[in-house]
Image (cartoon, rainbow, N blue to C red; front, side, top):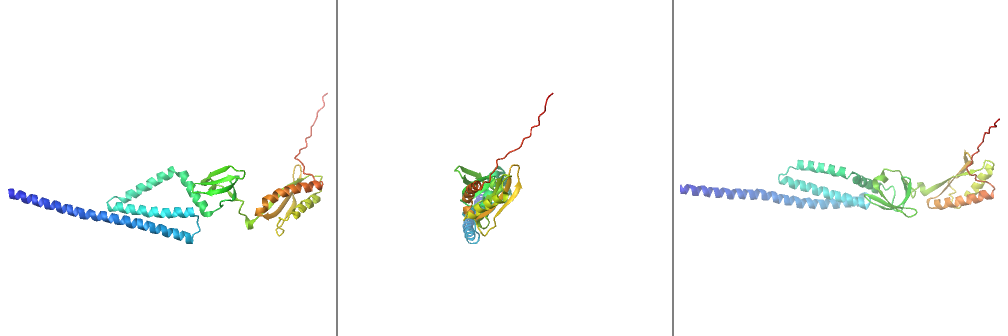
Length: 286
């Protein structure tokens, strides 16, 4: 009986040692495989992110900020796939894990909807470049000068100094008029001058044309126009159009307004105030 018990104990110890050996070998290989996958995964993440950076620098002309974001996204994507693969090595149900990550991503996306919208708009602005730093643009009816473009907001200032910070989604969803970029780098002066009905129209047109001809900044190769455009309530309205270089336009507009008033005064042509005629009908009693 004692001999049988000793044999039983001996067999039990051998089996236990065998099981421990098998377990160590089996799971040790899993751990080693996981470590190897992690090393290869992080190595691939660095290689692919660097390759992406070189490709974008040589082939695609994008903003450096977008390049950094894209390179970072490639790196994080490879790392995420590596971690999921390692979890699969340990028997974790990766399908459920991926579904959980997807659901979490949707929840975070909904919570950060406004922020993500700003980021998406910022990427579009940086990629398409409707304006650059230093440009004068009109957004939502307000003219501002751009100071800095970011992923979340665009920093700018108004012409008279106040600082402006605009969420990118507000900019991308609005009409953008860039005054610093014009067709053929020219800009047209568009003015309407009102003269009195009693004044000589042809004389007024000759006087306005002389102001345009005297300005050396007017582009002589481009057409100018001085014509009657409408008959207003208080004045005959004459449209004035002339082309300038973009950088000359604003000062030329100011100078034209001043010189036109002086020329019309000298020619005896008046610029009438808005006025209305009121006729009263009286009644007699008795």
